[in-house]
Length: 214
Ligand code: URA
Image (cartoon, rainbow, N blue to C red):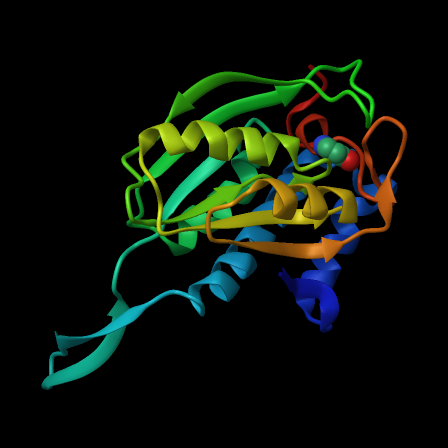
């Protein structure tokens, strides 16, 4: 498990802004900050990937440099992931991408969360490293449901679960229910879920803040 804001960095500035109710009228800034956090987390995940030595020719001479052995496949969970996904896509700009539409019924409680899957369009993920991107890791159920459906398209080498804010309950649920190799990456680990399974202190509804109420 990796937690970005354990050490102070500019990421904490972006995290503070996306949480602050006084900035929530500025949707463009909210989306931009999610994108920036996506870029930073993409960079952190990139340190865990495999590299190979490649020969590169500069205008002056040939030289050997490390380049990525395989590009990770990016999978965004619609709709809240879109701006956060964009940050990953900016850095892994040659990666193939897929999208999953997973959402929970509004009447859900912590005990009875219903995840509905509406859309799945992903490339073959067999033996690849996959970054599954959803900004709010609350109950963990949409991540697990997404992985279960992704596995219909092949068994990946590893899944990186990428979130902006995570709750301890969701992390436990994922670790208890995913039996394929995975690492959870988050920008911040919060206190808990409330009775409606929102993350506390959290930021509210990430999808609504980015795109407006459904
Ligand atoms: N999804 C959100 O957008 N916010 C939460 O707190 C939990 C899930």
